[in-house]
Length: 241
Image (cartoon, rainbow, N blue to C red):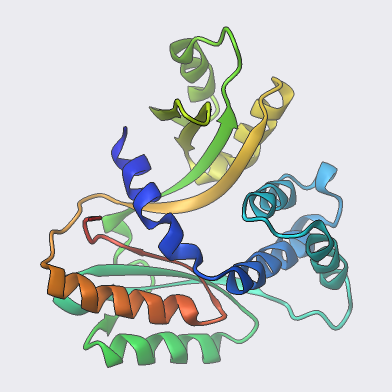
């Protein structure tokens, strides 16, 4: 399996946490997508992908419909997507994706957690060289498909030549340029692939070894960040166990 897939698989459960918190995070993603592209999933690829992920996380359809309806209301909070980056304990790089209607509150909360663990919150872009920003699509493999031909075809749409196949689930995972998200999604759907997941992620360029004691401290910091209602995802360059 590729480096990206191994890292993503090892961190997936930690990123989402408890179910109620997961639904809250997805609700914010829906609100942002609806405000940007409208409430109709057929005409809003980003919203369509979020609904797919909501289904994958077992979010009830009624919750999804309610989130879409609420996003159209005049009194709905205007969420923005923001990122925070810095170094945590033991020199581990930490990247935080958030969705918030109050950046002052969010940056204050994030900075307090970094300070609590003797970390250092940096300026935007200061750690971008340590992480690759990618879009990730997971879809069902079709009978008779030659992977080399499929990837060659998808490269024209910004997809990388690295991919992963899960023989147990029969799913393929591909990685691409985040700017090409809509084009990749459209191409997969138009060619009859059943897309089961679509998201953005950050993959560290280099993974750092830590001791069990250091890992415990870093995990506590990551958990505290993920417990914040505004935080969507937390990424580190700590080597998975």
